[in-house]
Image (cartoon, rainbow, N blue to C red; front, top):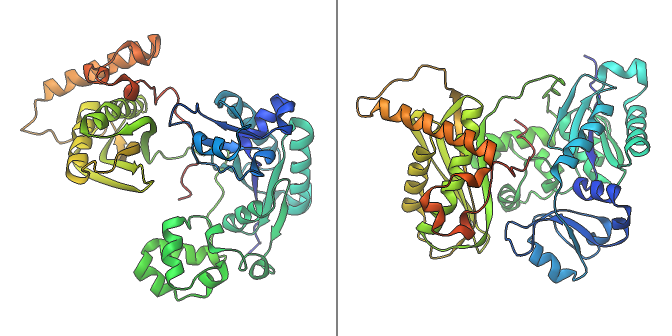
Length: 414
């Protein structure tokens, strides 16, 4: 069987680098892309190299970043520009293969296995792509080359900026196994803590560990990351025109002030539920599982979910489940800092449903038509043109448009 050659390309500190490209003077000052400091959903999304010297961290609040560097320049995100330039970069990738799979805006896998006779080795193709992106667009990328997607991504993360690392079947134990296990895709903080209990600190430790013990303590994910560490990943790179299945629809926000009680939470969740319901209806979909995630001011997070008998895309039905989940699982002894809601176990609206003897179907259809009408009004006149009265109780918490400002995050690997 022919060995695969897969590249993983990562635009270095993407948002910040695009801002620097548009305004070159920003390259010489500590700069980060983030929200307004007075709004707590203002977090650091990306930072440039001068800001890294002050240990500015992606994901921390703008307030925390200012404490590290008072001269930090905060640039608001310009998502349309990021979408435009990252697509131009991926247009270059697509000249070398029809197998290009995006992983968020700034990352992509490219399977060049069938292109080697045209363009040379994987390493040569990586060098050419890296050079073209820099000269034609003005952005630096790091590239990993390997025989599977996991090690290709690992390679692109090893050297920043403009890194070029090849992890082959012959050298992966030397190059990959010495790295911290947290560098492996899908080994997050919670999984890392569990692995450390077993003395697993490097990728090599994980690869040599008993997979049955991992399965007992980590479930399916334990086996998956074991396979990742040993280079057994055989997942394919998706084609350019592959339609990605929508698995969930969700929105979340870090609020401008603490959520101290149920009423505060409802003010925020009503807005989020309306956004999720509207986005579901636009796709012609409904879902049977409603999930919430809560993060308190101690930065501790947890999630709860409920599976429904009947799929829904009505905001009031979503809100009813959200309120139930909050009442049953949170007492607000510690205020909340950020919240989110998502709808999963999706199906198409056109699929047949079992009507309930205990529901007024005519009333339900009227509510559906009303929400569709409201969505059309908001589309034409803005999200704030129609509001529930409950949203007016605390406009500081509810005055945001999660649908209009929805941020694009990397899709799941699986």
